[in-house]
Every structure is written in structure tokens, then in C-alpha cells.
Image (cartoon, helix red, strand yellow):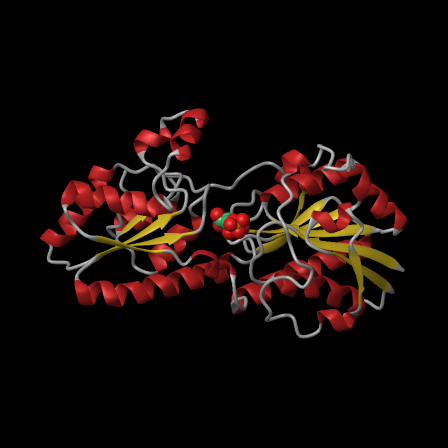
Length: 357
Ligand code: F6P
């Protein structure tokens, strides 16, 4: 008999349900007797003992369902060691609940912050297996996270739609793509949608170079320009600011997001009108794409196999087209960013995409 706890933490994404279903299907197909305890709303459920016992039935029909049947929440890692408002030691509470239910293992699905806490729980002696979720694809130790490809599809659809109206009206459009710290989603959706300019956090932009790229397009006879801009796109000047200075600037920030700032700068400097479209959380919503369904199922199956073998302390990831196990301590606390020298960036530049650098 195996007693497994499960939780989904952080911003949700497509294929969380598909991944959990993969774990449970693998375990039940092995013939092993399994009890599944689903903790609700991320680590909160584990801290406060808020769980539901789940059966195979709960996982039926959820392969294609977006969101997470367990609910999710953000529980910042830096607050984990701080007592809650009633003085509760959260780490101790999580351990107590784990031991009270006599769990063999926790299966934790999440992104960067989630992995820091998962690794802390491992260090505290709990058996943990994690699965890499995030539309940002910024988890260290895996070439791919589930949710990413579905989000690329949605952001690309948005750019495609903007393309037709931009070409009718001969306008400059910014499509703001999710990603505060990393630009994988913007880069991929931008390339897939044929964006002319892509701005990502890892490659600070110079607004004059951005305007130059627009002017050059116009000089070549293009009536419109499509820009894919990451939520965390940053100018060269701002990239030089210290964290404190940047925080100070953001206090009196007059724009809803960076795209509006960039649009305003272009308009003021060039007199050209710029429209902004923000697909926002639609990028995390709806059904997982077929790629993510397959991928999440494969990751889930491998997690099930590790549980059956009693091998813990790993994230199940993807490297060089193989499903792999990666020690949690190697993953926690590291971001997988786009290198400005990455071949994909060079290739984008080779086909004329400007990064404003
Ligand atoms: O989970 C990742 C992510 O979707 C980022 O791409 C985005 O910047 C952030 O979460 C948005 O967070 P929230 O849903 O808390 O507004």
C-alpha cells in the first residue's frame, strides 16, 4: 500500500490535471494499492491539513481539463519560515500533516517558488517528487515545462489575430506576453506569430533602436509592425538601476504595464500611434494543447514509476528528448533564462527580428 499526498502550487497552467492523472493512472495500472490525499490550494492545504481523499474517479476525464482540480495558491518561499498570523510554524505544520497521514511521498506540481519549498521539505526529511509546471518554461534542470506549449499556442493566436487588423490599418501593435523574469514565451510566440520586434527581460532594449527598426520596415514598404513584448521587458537605462532604484521608480509608475510605457515612448519620440493588446491570463487558461497532454502524461507516468520504486527527492524533467529525473537540490532556486547568445536568438536575428539591442 502506498499513501501519496499531492498538491499544485503557484500560478496555474494547462496540463496540471493531465500530469496528476498520469501519476495516478501509472500507480493504479501497476496493481499497487494506493491512497491519494489531495491537498487543496497549494502548500496552504498541507500547512492547514486541508485535504480530500481522492479516488481514480476523481482523475477520470481530466486529461483535457485546464486549471487544477486541487486548486492552487501562491505561498512565497521567503515567508515559509515565518509563523502565520496565529503563530503557527508552517514548516512544522506541513511535516506534522505528512506524518499524521503516514504518507509515503508528496507529489508536488509547481514552478520556481514551489521547487524551493519542495526542496526544503526534502531537506526536512520528507519524501518528495516534483513535476515541472509553468507557462514560463524557466525551471532549471528541464528543457521543457508543461503549460509552456499551450501558452505559446494562445499567445501566438493572439499575435495572429493582431496581425490581420494591424495590416488592414497599417498600425504598430504591441502584444504583451506573460513572463516577468524570462522571455521564453515571448520569444517563441513572437517567432511563431512572425513578430518584427521581440523585447524580452534578458535583452534590455534601446527605444531608439526599436524606433529605428520600425522606420526601416516602413522604408521597405511595410505598412505595419508587430511587437511581442514580455511583461518584464526592460530598457537599457532601467537595467542599469539597482533593485532599490527600480523599486522606487515603480512606486510612481504611471502605466498599467511596460507595454504602455514602450508605446508611449514610441509615440512621443516618433509621433507614430501604437496600440497595445494584453492577452494576460488567457495564456494560462483553457485546455492543454495535445503536446502538453502527452508531455504531462509522460512526466506523470515517470513520477508514478519513481514512487513504485521508492526513489524520492527528484523533479521529473525533460532533457535531450528524454524524460529524466533531476535531483531537487540541483533545481531549487535557479532560473533557466534565455541567453542573449542562444542560437534561437541568433536565428531570430538572422531572419530580421529586432530585439531593440
Ligand atoms: O505562473 C507564471 C505567470 O503566469 C507569469 O508568466 C506571470 O508573470 C505571473 O505568473 C502572473 O502571476 P499572477 O497570476 O499571480 O498575476
